[in-house]
Image (cartoon, rainbow, N blue to C red):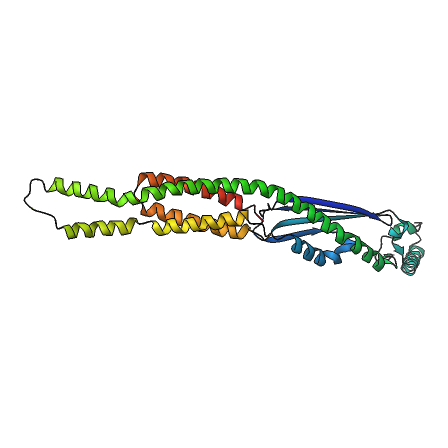
Length: 296
């Protein structure tokens, strides 16, 4: 089964007056890369959230954004009265020493370090957030995977179309390959006969056969054809298989091997017809390479 690396999923819930929302999107990446954006109060959940994402999503650059909106009275930070009194006492002392007529504004003192502190039930609120966010992340991942699967079906159709183009052109190469040596032999004999037409000499047939054999060895592409056929079969099996395993890197490797065989055939074969077919094959392989980069 082919899945794209591009997708989006979201999920939200309201629990005890607190609104939670999760958005996850993914784009192409050779490896798995997670970018997590959590509220400061939930930074401690970053590591386990990444583990959950990695378990669900095999490949791609994944960005997860978490938002928490707490409108309950419990969202208020507690005031450290001892710290506030200490600040006020110091300010009064300074005011008395300077006697400049300034007034003491307690409201402005809450922004000083140590005045506002986390409420005493912060740990409980943190655990409640974890209990809510974990299933939300899973639901958002499932939505993203569904989108990846839908786009993967379109990818599979295009990949199989290119696969069919390669296979069709390869069959023409298979038909043309045996004629290369025969045509070379005919050209060689004709050339020799023309050169020796006015001379009373003959050509040793052993030398002629040896020359043809050397040419046949240099232009033999049977092994490359066999290997390319094998790669095409593996490629098709991976695309049409349904075991749910990641396919992107395997398809990338097979594409590289197909291109290697096509390049070797192009360098060994002197036939114009075969050269034209190999150009078509390489063009289809290049299109496959582009598409495979988006396969998870």
